[in-house]
Length: 223
Image 1 (cartoon, rainbow, N blue to C red):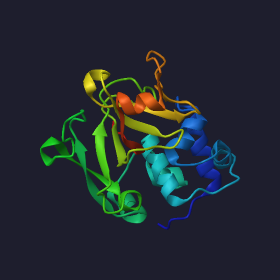
Image 2: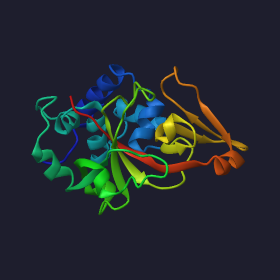
Image 3: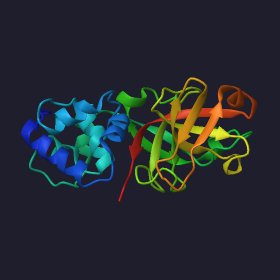
């Protein structure tokens, strides 16, 4: 089997997955690392062929066989080791048990196993960690027990989904929010409307403090 994408079939299957999910086009674009949602529409309309890694990330998001999504006549949900060999080599990433202020959360004693992640995404893996979602604040995009792959960094771009620590909030344990920078403040927004947004001035970010732990680069989900 080669790595060619059967464009017409891919666009039909990709469109079907999107229409049957609760993920908005803008959110999907962000999760795939695509700058414009118009690119998603071009994939859906068969006007553009995605790169192989993009198809693999999409298959992870929708929990389908990457070869099926590429247009091949294979089981929709039968993921297998062959896909890993075709797309990328993988490296193990530590799954962090707890992220809490004044706590060495990268200590090896604070891990609960590892998860294989594509080397093309994480390189030698030293700048990445995995973390399991513990609540419904980012539902329906991220749900409890989802595993997210996070790049360690202390800043973010508007639109990133950030992992952060806010002094006095959530028992000083990490929370996950979509982050947006404005002229005078920063907004941290939950996908779940039952959670109020958090807004801080830049001065408050330093004084509280609000600490950015990293940004989400990939979602891993299993049924």
